[in-house]
Length: 265
Ligand code: OAD
View 1 (tube, rainbow, N blue to C red):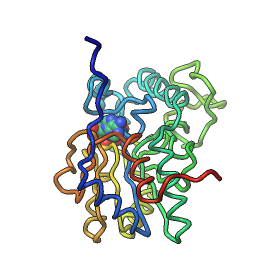
View 2 (cartoon, rainbow, N blue to C red):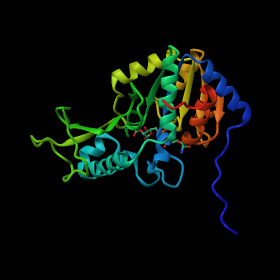
View 3 (cartoon, helix red, strand yellow):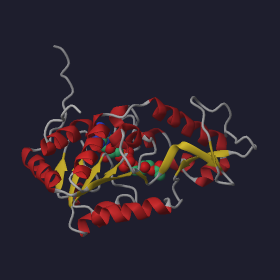
View 4 (cartoon, protein in one colour):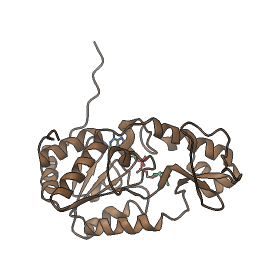
C-alpha cells in the first residue's frame, strides 16, 4: 500500500464562514504573526514539532545578553546559521495572502497592520508595508557597545563574533529574553491592537509576552479575534474563532472567500 498523503487539518465550516464574514466586514485588521507563519518557507519554529529549535537548543544559552557575554562565538554562530537560513527562504502563500489583504483593505479606506514576532523579514520581502517587528530583525547586526548598524555579508560571516571595520564585536539585531522590545514597535502595536475590528493571530504559540498580550488588548476593544494554527495554543480558549490549518493553506482561502478570486492586474 502506498503511504497516505499528509492531510491538512481543515477549519470547520461554521468557524470558516464566521471568519470570512468578519474579514469582509472589517475596515481595520491587525495580524500578530509568529514562527508558524514562516514554517512553510522552511524556517523552523521554536516550540512544538520535531524540528522546533527550543527542543534541541536552550534559549537561556543562546538568546540572552548573558549568553552572549559568556560565549559570543557560540551565540553568533547560531544566529548567523539562522540568518543564512532566512536569507535562503522565500515568502510562502500565507505571506502573499496578507499582501493582498492589505491591498484590499487599503483600497476600501481601511488598512492592515502586521505585528510580527518573526525576525526573518519575510513579510516585507513578500511586499507587505509598514511591518512592525516586535522582536527585531536577524538581518541587521549592530555593535555591541555603540549600537551602530553594520552591513552583513550575503553569505555567512567569516569570524565569530563578527566585528565592525573598527573591530567592535557585533550582535544580531533581535530582542533577547530579558531585553525590552523596541519602543516604537510596541507603541505601533498598541495603536493597531486598539484600533482594529479584527485581530488574526497566526502561527504563534501565544506563549511569549508582551506580544501575546496584543490579542487581549484587541479583544478588550471589541475586535473579533481569529486564530490560524494547525494546533492548540495558549490563546485557543480565549479567541472568538479558531481556524485549524496552516498559514499557507488557510490564509489564501480566507482572503479569496472574503474578496473573490484575484484578478490579473
Ligand atoms: P512558537 O515556536 O512558540 O510557536 C509556533 C506556532 O506555530 C505553534 O503554535 C505551531 O502550532 C504553529 N505552526 C506550526 N506550523 C505552522 C504553519 N504551517 N502554519 C501556522 N502555524 C503553524 O513561535 P512563536 O509563537 O513565534 O522569541 O514564539 C514566540 C517567541 O518565542 C519567538 O519570537 C522567539 C521565541 O523564543 C525570541 O527569541 C525573543
